[in-house]
Length: 142
Image (tube, rainbow, N blue to C red; front, top):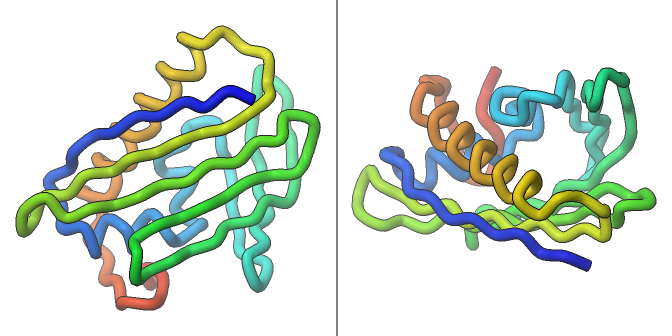
């Protein structure tokens, strides 16, 4: 199994950033291949994506720890794909995101790392542009 990690900073409050990222409906806003993500109850999320010209659908899981500002997620399948995300407050209005991905997928290391770095940058940008309110212990209101 290979682990890929990337850390970036964002000009947004850590609680706001975490709230935005913890809402699975926001996934398509920062993962360009993902076309839909809908909570199905509990930790189950139905996801859809266009990957290499093919539309795929499946079930994933997302565990949110609001107090620790930590997310863990994964999808069952041949790649044994899973990961975690941690949001930390650096200064008021400024936070740090660390994302780690784990997979047995056979891919070019640079390709996966580059995609991870682009996704983390998109997370920070999308959350900064998001003006919807978020309540502690809940997801962004739509």
